[in-house]
Amino acid sequence: MSTPTLIRGADLLGQGRADLLLEGGHITELGRLTPPAGTQVVDAEGLIALPGLVDLHTHLREPGREDAETIATGSAAAAAGGFTAVFAMANTDPVADCAEVVERVYDIGRRVGLADVQPVGAVTRGLDGVELADLGLMARSRARVRVFSDDGRCVADARLMRRAMDYLKAYGGVISQHSQDVSLADGSACCHEGELSGRLGLPGWPGVAEEVIVARDVMLARHTGTRVHVAHVSTAGSIEVIRWAKAQGIQVTAEVTPHHLALTTAELSGYDPLYKVNPPLRPQEDVTALRAALADGTIDIVATDHAPHARHDKEHAFVVAAFGMLGLETALSVISELMVTTGRLSWADIARVMSTAPARIGGLFAEHGRPLRVGEPANVTLVDPTRVVTVDAGSSYSLSRNNPWHGRRFTGAVHATFLRGRPTYLDGTVYPLEELR
Ligand SMILES: [Zn+2]
Image: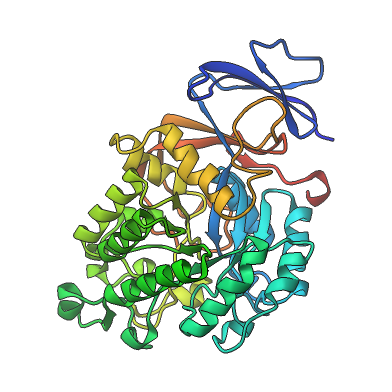
């Protein structure tokens, strides 16, 4: 059992300033408190307390690509980024398509103890898009899988998608779809198809490749009465479809990444593979629409799509380099700069889009995304809303260095993270469990 911690004077958003006592994994007292003997006191003057952040879309690369990231290093990056829970995507080697692999990922995550690692199960065996994976066995396993995804690939076959949605209804499960019609996005495509890709001579794929799958899936959600989650929405057209579907009462949720909110195709002009990502960076019109949709609630959550890559996979010519960028450690600062300092979202909104809503969508709401009240699990993130940070790609807990934010300045930063009352990140340092030191 960890030492009790008293967080002194944090802004509890709507409940005013108060002290929080974290003891035995829970918030045990709230108000103006005198710390009991042996309590660690954390001064939170000027800081905001949020429920611990939850990332519905993370790639931890273990098992199989431990040269790019491990569950331990990814969990450390998560803790430093203010996350108390992360959903680890299934495109590992072996693929997380059966109970054995998801339980292994879950167990390693618990043993590391820096964030609750919740495995995502594959929809199809081996991500091959041909036959359904062991959905029920994963759902009933120790890992209690509730989110299923072939992320990196789209579940292209409408019949399989329909069957998986029908099947998951019994478990309250959800499919997080990587919406991309492969017949509109051929194998060599590496960026958004448009005026710029033509000028740069890069093969691209169009926004409509995403939009047709989003449209198909919301109709399948209506037909099956099951919910569907749209991973990393990137175009204005997808937002129109989602807005329409929500107005019809169709159960659809959607996420956007910090990079799709902040960066445009303009980054591609230097052919830097750091900006090669799937779905690709889009033109300003799409980015403007994404920001508005997150602000008006059409997009439910922010998710990182943290995608670490070893140097030998990323440092190539743009056309052949791997897709993806790091995101766990910088997400809160990017979103703060982009959405809070501009008045588009309040900090209470940030609690919703980065903690409460992702915890609900992913089925973790009993433990994460809870209101900060007595009796609730002590998963807490302290944010300094005025601290200005300059990102240094060299100082990261991730094993990889594909960080697109190097040298950029953001206002707003994570100050500390507590998982079940234990500090996992404090004073600029991640604190692994005693037995891991
Ligand atoms: Zn994806």
